[in-house]
Image 1 (cartoon, rainbow, N blue to C red):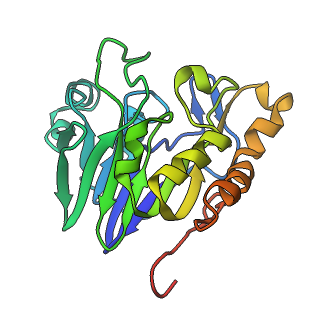
Image 2: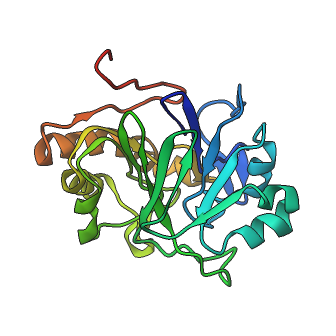
Amino acid sequence: MWLTDSDVALLTDPVLTDRLAHLRRMTGPTPRLAHAPDAVLLSHLHADHFHLPSLRAVPGEPVLVLPRGATDLVARGLGARYADRCVELLPGEQTVVRGVTVRAVRAAHDGGRAPWSRHRAIALGFVVEGAARTWYAGDTTLFDGMTAFGPLDLALVPVGGWGPTLDPHKHLNAATGAEALRLVRASWAVPVHYGTFWPLGLSRIRRHMFHEPGDAFARHAATSCPDTKVRVLAHGETLTIGPDA
């Protein structure tokens, strides 16, 4: 996902292929980046968020903002010239990208499961502060500290995944995502992390889990936080917020 604030372009957890192990891209064309980002935000080390071939395909030489301890994986997988661009953060730490502050925040998610389980880098979310305050959650479940992230202008809330068992692996679903939105007090929200990749064959029997999470999140949010404007984006769509939007 692209996030642009004050002419600074940030790319979050890019996966730029059509296949990822047993997963297949189920919507939209293979991504082609028209320009280089200023930074890539990498929330944790699971392969659907930390995908080394996709990082190699990102044009330019963007800063790679990632959890503390992850640079070694970048160095071994991509080489020293990529590792030299890494900025490691723990929750509460921050870096500045061309005047826009990127602050790491907690995510309640096991960031060290396979394939990199021996690397115990924790999972992160990010609060980006430029002209707006935006929360990109990465992968997480609910936790009390979410209230400290708000108030926000925009929340990018994960509401699904690529399998039918979200809760045991600490993911938000449509209902708990709406509760997270209530906690962070955002003016705008976009549901993310659903409907793109799906295990081969599973979509034939569980298509509701592929198509429905975004709209279900919007319905839950209308009840739990009616003052928040929710936009369910189709693949390739853009949301612009601000006084002139």
